Image 1 (cartoon, rainbow, N blue to C red):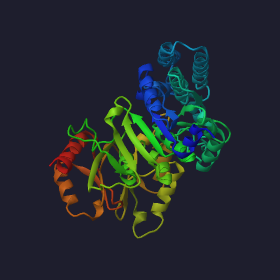
Image 2: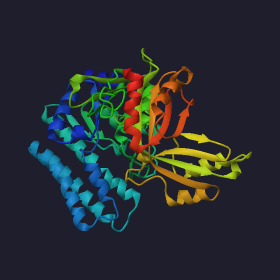
Image 3: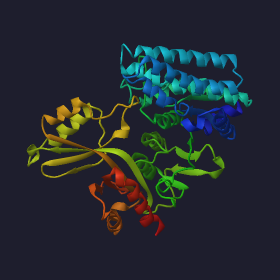
Image 4: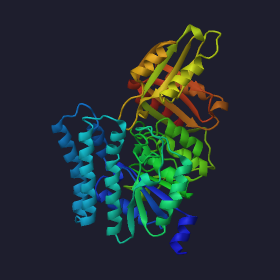
Length: 459
């Protein structure tokens, strides 16, 4: 067995690069240097180049005419060809890119007659297919053996197009058979965000699913670490654009990171942490533009566990209010409501109840890959059969993340001092020792986050 093969088994690192990190040739070159600086990094997961997925999403829309469709295809091709030109247009790479762009055009035309989500998912997957081929070529240009790999061979999912669920055991088995043997010979570059069902049809994991893909593959291959390379130097106490004095966090626990990801920390996809938790795989978040600045390590156990760790913000929230006298001294109303939501693949975040009312928050940013929202007419009609439904939009969810929040005196007092002049639509605290959540108007969210950060972290 070769030395590299032993390394692969003992200390495999999976590195994931987001859209801004693979936006152009210069960005890809910097990221290739990061990969080559660590011999343990043998698997690279990439997003589509910055802007490409948004262009592809627009291509899936029903109102796109032929003129606009051709313009969008030209914009996408321009991004790929600019990188190809910097590479000197190697014949095999150019042929692969041309083949994908041709398929992209065919799929976009097909949507005029058949608007199935299966076709949309295959179209949306083409951005990652292009970037993985190009990134692998950049690594080879630097003198290291590299090849691209079609992740659809191993990342098995169900057939829920747009928001597919992974089949964990199948991914582990297929990765061991088809992906792991390649890591001893090459630095493998593969695609995030996409998979395939048991019939081989392309699926997507939802917007932001590339982080999830990297963690799923790391879990399947028993990696020692997942590196998430993005455009910020780690996780901060809050978004620095909202609070100028926000500071980076050197180390954070899985539980805290899961709460932050769930409640809006955009450097991390909410589901990313789940495979890492299952296998206790440490996760690093850093800036591909400034790797020397370090970043944040997410670990199973950490030494420092402060009461206040961060303030997270998630915009574009919906409050679903359900009113029914059937709830009064009766059983089964909540079960029926959640069964309805489950049938429509709706995940509830926060919930408060009274004798005849239930209020639920839904994350509109959790829409599927095609950008379609959660509250369909069929869902609202089904709920209306057994209760009165009222929907409130333009809300934002703010979460104070930390440790022992449910058992530490004085926290509510400090938070409510900040909130006394704001209209709070919901408060949720006690279910987890790691968060206290409030729902406020979207227009007030930035002001509330900054004030909370000043009160909890700067005073």
